[in-house]
Image (cartoon, one colour):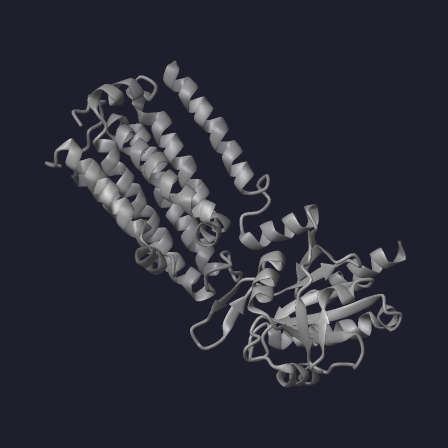
Amino acid sequence: MRSLLASLLIFVAGVAMLSLATNGFSAFTTEAARRIDVREHPRAVPDVNLQTARGRHIDFKSLRGRWLLVDFIYTRCIAYCSVQGGVFARLQDRLAAPIAHEKVALLSISFDPEHDDPERLADYQQRFGDRGAGWLAARPVDATDLAALHRVFGVTAVPDGLGGFVHNAAIAVVDPRGQLVAIMDWDDPRAAARFVIARLGS
Amino acid sequence: MTLLPASRAWVGLLLCGVLATPPARSVLEATMTLQMLVQIPLLAVAGWFVGLAIPHRIAAAVARWNGGGIPGLLLATFVGMVWMLPRMMDASVDEGWFTLAKFMSVPLLIGVPVALSWSRAGFVARGVVLLELIATAFRLGWLYLVSPMRLCSNYLLSDQQQLGKYLLGIGIAASLALAWTLMWGHIRVEYVESKL
């Protein structure tokens, strides 16, 4: 009898623990958990300093007032990011009108700032057909800023043993107040564009 | 085991201490395979040694709530499931509190309960646990082998697939060993009071 009671208690506690550890059985991976967490608790993006592909220094704050679609890249990448760049160029087309009205901007941030100087960033944008408006490529200048971006956006980059990185590529959405509100699949630019357009109307 | 209870406890604590050192952690957490097949099992073994050293009086008190070892095995199963979640394996590498939780809970909530329960468990309970372990090895092994997606943000896809192969290998080896024991080995079917 006592053992049955103990088993029942352990069973209930065990299911509760598993539920807690998976956001109610919906997030089994860190990636899924970060997306749910961002949607439920938008995060303020810290005011990091970025150097753009033109060599200009800007503060993240100065980008407020428009919706930002942000991805994290490194220009040497021959895996995802070689497609990610193309995705952003296509987003420039898809969002041309709101970009022209300065309601939306695209931002690619390098997590490999030592290698990715302005020249390489410019080259990266050119390689993927930058349409010339509304797409910034930039690198954090300060190591603490890079760490802060990693933490807030939940970016993990693992050395792949071949001199590159494997990273959790995604399109992050930052609202006009500078809050990170969603993280979406990097290979579905339509969904990201729809997300922003739906919120522009309101 | 001919070690005295006190030395068993020391073996367990020493093993736990060694596993917690930064060099051991950096080696064993470098790949998904090492974390899942070496680090976590060794932590459980450390707890098992500590569990064997628990004084009879306390063990007997626990045993009254641990009929047939089932509550203890259930506890170990749930805690094992938690540390098999990809996001928990990630978190235990990235975040201090989760590291601490892993190093405390795997020995104390898997190793110790198994040590206190396995000898009390009957034929059916043992069979269920062993078959479930084998089934888990096949399920996870297959998942890791075919998943095109990285399940852990900290580990590479190739590492995940290698772990999948090892898990399938372990599943096959354990099935054969179990089948061999069932056919030719000596199996204790009835419950016997353990002498520890």
